[in-house]
Length: 167
Length: 433
Image 1 (spheres, rainbow over the protein chains, first blue to last red):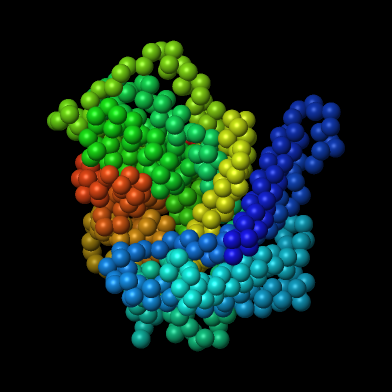
Image 2: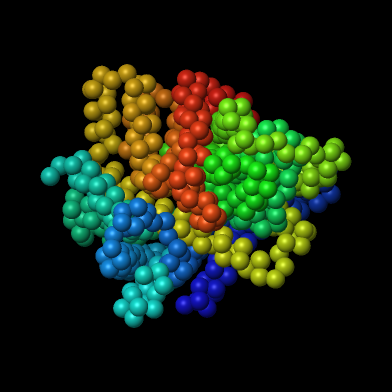
């Protein structure tokens, strides 16, 4: 699980850096093209073509891989005020319930992501400005939700084997 | 069962799931999808799930979240907290309670880069707490000033909570950031006055430290200027219309990375750890946003917000009373929920009411974020209190809670000032280009 987590966070961070680079390149091109009397002003495009499409693609990738990473590591926003008052056994059961509900939700999201991504592929839908195939955007959604669902299963298995420290 | 009633039951079910430690995002998502299925049949839920999972995280404006997180985490890794503390301390440390004021100032400065309250507290505590103890500060004042100062991080721009509010209400993020500037400054000043007041009443709480020489002041100023300059570039760029918030966030992230690199702070496994922290923090926020998107789909179909607006309109209550009631509810809710979940769960209900009453949406956003700040330092789940007592075993929760009470009073005074003088939040955005 640790190796998968490292890979997922590594890829997500590289994609995030890509988002930074694309956005900075767009700012630089805009500044250069507005510079009066610049010798290459006509040769330089005024912006990165399809910067919004590219940022959205990187954003969807970062978001879904990072969600998968939180499931792999087991770090979520939870409120433990009442759970802290429960006896140990009840709390363990509550955690199992939490992972089971999380698995059900992420598995449903995974199935629907496949259905909708396939629909986008079959209909040949393209992005607004640089006509990227929209099904590309669904690949990270499918991978992220699938990994998240698998991670939940892993935690449930850890619960059964009493090896998962978060339980 | 009527739609609005199902909506209320969905809200209650979400709170019940959260109470048994189901992740907040999952609780909202599951309650939302179950409620939607109850209203419209199970066959239509698939489309909602697929759409929400995609739409919730594909909005171009959302890209500021991981970028600002990256900026804050890299700034923290290059020793910003220590430098900021030394900077403010050099100028105010020789006053009574000066080290506590320095902690608040360092929190405000760090919050200006970081945008996360918990990260601010976790970063400033190891720097400021030992220093205050060394000079004989009472633990109550030491812990209280850091816990309260940390809350400034979620209001002083760039604020993640304001990003979320902006997306929920379609208000301009740039204007919200600019609107938060003066109230954030007001919060810092009020906290500092809180320290002055406490040490005036009981001087033993925070004895004066040694006075720094002007040479020392110059040295610490030189160390801190790159990061303060980065904040100036990011926020000034938004205010002057040079950058959109997304562009400013990318400039901030790249700038913080370069500063950390130049300072040699990314050696060993630090780069990997910073990358992991950025991605994990982003993931926790995005999961809550996905769950909230599903829940909001459901709430819209229940017509609950419209029913609430009609009820408020027909109640005959003066608008100010309604606002005060809403603020009261947020203060109570803040005792049990974290700020992001609270905003995502309640703004879809509350915002239409506030808008129908004719209040400025920018002002309301600032008031609500200020109120959620209070939740971070009020028991039983004031997260900042836990962070401090968790980081220093010698500090009991009781000491931290006692220490933070004067600062909660400062917060309440700030809310009253903001409600009485909305211009504090609305003036600066009105001057934007």
